[in-house]
Picture (cartoon, rainbow, N blue to C red):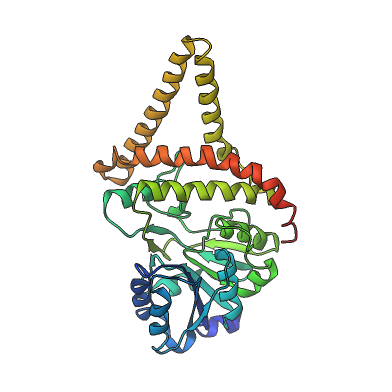
Length: 349
């Protein structure tokens, strides 16, 4: 951080993209009104993707309050297009990003700003569950939503419990909760507008490649309204898996064996099931594989309930764990099949 930046609180733009977010946006806008940051050093940029549920009307009402936010309608496109529009409209050298279904504390910007320093391109913080129902808490336990102090890793330890700085970890900041140095954003070329999701770790990869670092701040926490049904959660995870395959095709260095693990297990099961029609003894192998999967899910559920100190999750978490793995088993290979043709037109970023 330069001496000029240290001398005063900087002017910060807060960018939010919305689409049919009338259910959640009013709460976030109320949080914005309580932020512990000088109003003359703050602007809000709200970009709406042609909502049809009253979101845009709510934004226009919010725009009547001082300081008047910058508002825009996004042309059809994925969320990266909306965020790029938000950054284009933002006047500040530092741009905070969050989503419409988030709740942010009064100290949010101050904690993120504390993490900014020389050579840091992005500062991120954790996002925890906002809801207290069993579904929200079960989803929060599964490590699928980026940094989360409450997530229970399938293996290893939770690295989100301590602050750190990295030049390799693209998941240290996600766009639910990030503060960007605009110069780093511009150096990386902005969000890839062809990605439906997973656009934030992909951008982080290019920011790191441009010579900047990412800093994670545990104290800069926000809360996320997670998906509230098994179906919506499964669809979300399938979308993550499908588009992660596209990101991995574009940047092979981000590929991991864990991305293929659910698909490999699923393929093994399908193969054994097919053999069972030829040789009945393989039916027992298929049943054994099902039993192993169920026991693994139950074991993870028990561990999650124990780590979080929430006994009622012992039977809820396994259901969402299995849905998570099934979504990746199906969607990731589908994404790989589509990514080859897609990647040919997206090699410039």
